[in-house]
Length: 349
Ligand code: FES
Ligand code: CO
Image (tube, rainbow, N blue to C red; front, side):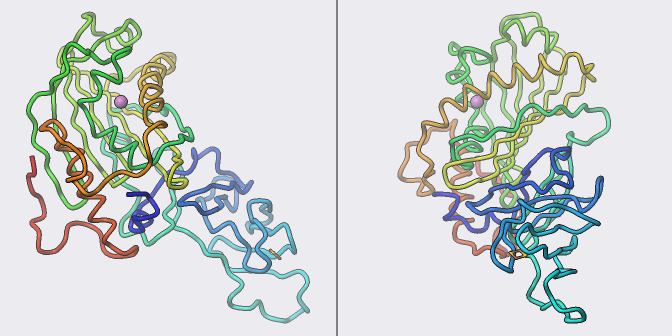
């Protein structure tokens, strides 16, 4: 299944840039193979997003500029306000009203967790709640925002797949001699998934400094959650000292084969800013290992669950395939969540 075969993915929110990268200078972004533009009508104002195409003669609005709170098209200078309404047509005769169809196709846009998020479909809810990411007692640290030559569902599938850690990350936090996971149960609620599992992880030198753990191997648990079809939350808890390192991974589909991957974390140990680089460096190394693998995997993720081989440890990613398959059946703009005849939460593990 490719992103373009699941139109309902358009009804979700995706980060497109860091909040401070969105200014009064219009910023082009690509999502679902389309060109969009984000900007602020004034410094510090809420972000606005629209299809990056002027309704007059198709010029790219991202080549324009902001003046007096309006976005000015670079071709004939038509001006658009934050609602996408055209407020001025310089070449029109004085007193002639603006044609009603001279308006932009705006997208839902908002800001949270230091990111600008947009929804180019029909948002059934707000920007996702990510628990610790803006909770009291946790420090939010941004680690990366990169374009990967990998499909968004494959990236999220990898995040949900804990048994890969021992192998893909054998050079960092994986312990290839401890490949087995504790037993776990997958809980499903509509398109959300959650499970909790423990396993033995390696602790390289940098990770010892980052976590305060002194042994070469440690037991840690992962509470993994599919928050939205392309948004992952994974809370790592180190049993030795209670440290919580909550990973958030978002996969914004640029197109079927390309993704804007964003990762940020929340920590409960109040790390001083001079430690953030080391903490991020470890996670970036781990992600580079995933990236090398994912960029070589075909984009098409099978949702016919009989077409692949699954073992017990794969229950989370098996359920993810079912969710994507069900989403593909749903037209864009349809209400989200579980089908009405299903119980709200079911155990599938
Ligand atoms: Fe934008 Fe003409 S194309 S004003
Ligand atoms: Co990985």
